[in-house]
Image 1 (spheres, rainbow, N blue to C red):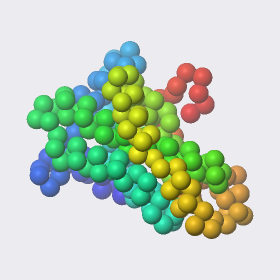
Image 2 (cartoon, helix red, strand yellow):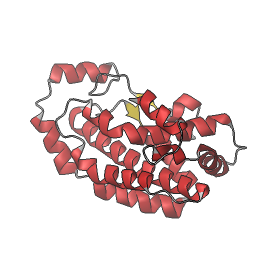
Image 3 (cartoon, rainbow, N blue to C red):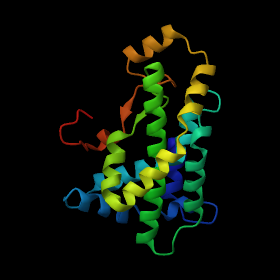
Image 4 (tube, rainbow, N blue to C red):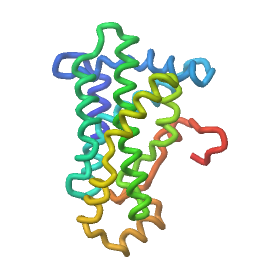
Length: 206
């Protein structure tokens, strides 16, 4: 799924492949400026990976095996797809719009994972998004970031997430193993998205 999304980002921008209109360079510039760093290849890799993660998040949630666990985030996914399909003609503005829409999806997924950790001890997805979301929040700026964070928070229905997890009748022995091995419900090792490109938050182990 990830490889297919990478191809969609790097392929030609067409009506059938609007995601390729994303300007990683412009988005990387926003991130670098927020971090007070000169733009580098790692900034572009990270923002590309961040958008890819949003595009594949429904599949990532479904891979957990929890029936309809992606339903509480459906509004966030619909918002992302609408922005992808209707990007501004200005590449810089389109970058901001798409990065913001990806933030809503990834922040929503982070919220679902937080609820799962509280209830069953392990996250639903294997991509740890907290650090990445903080970084993109900074790139978007506090005004935009806070507004979109409110959108993501409103999109998460904790009661529905809890019901989906409860109805799945998860095996306690398996949950203990997953927790001990730092794996998610999809049985994959939990990895920090931002850490792959060396991004860290001050004072954070991630």
